Image (cartoon, rainbow, N blue to C red):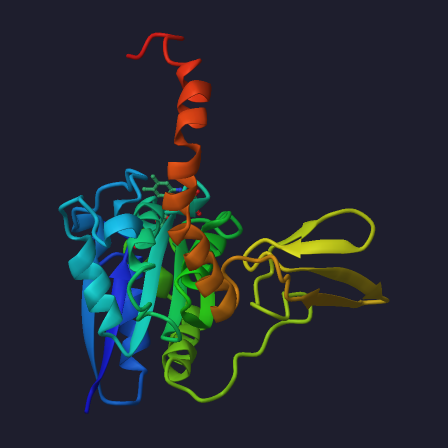
Length: 278
Ligand SMILES: Cc1cc2nc3c(=O)[nH]c(=O)nc-3n(C[C@H](O)[C@H](O)[C@H](O)COP(=O)(O)O)c2cc1C
């Protein structure tokens, strides 16, 4: 049976770089497949209201396209997420969509383990900022299996492939990797647990991976940089067990709120009349 690839396109530009990049990658997927594209910027996705109704009674009161997009993603064999860089970050719809994923907690989390390729396009070399990190964080929180994460450069629609064999070749390699059995290999300077190369220095040799939030150390021996990172048991999203444990913590919020609500109302009430709302 043909595999289903679902691509989330975070660019409003039709036939822009994100769109043609996804299509070029899929031209190089050798297994029989069907490509379904969702232009997330055309969907109605309202921001999470933090009402926690999804955790309490299992459904979100917001009516929009979220569920249909989430269901399509859950029905995929593999995902591709492609965003343009806007002022150093991914398109804000990535975050709006991710915040709404809180409601997926009570249900079986059917995205876990699906292969994903994350793609960023940017107009100027070196100016993609934290876009890639945003996508990698998105897939880690949803429990997706990151096959690859890459940035492609080009400002005008289509420019990523204009006289640029290197980027065409990279797209082909990505296509070959989507359903490959080969484990992803990481650079020496990347986090050995999640592959991110965005590391926060904590002083001396201590570091924290900004994407998977595990802690470790950095050592340099001549030219060679070595990162050692261990799973942080306090983490809330890295392993399946941590994820489930956090789900239980969220479930317990209702009971905690009922226990503390009078005290909290007194505390917050003290701020009620301050300032003028516009
Ligand atoms: C509002 C806006 C902000 C942008 N900010 C950046 C930026 O910070 N860095 C960068 O390299 N390119 C930036 N760009 C350029 C786009 O990332 C680039 O043109 C990309 O290829 C667009 O992909 P698309 O064709 O799929 O829309 C920006 C474009 C727009 C519209």
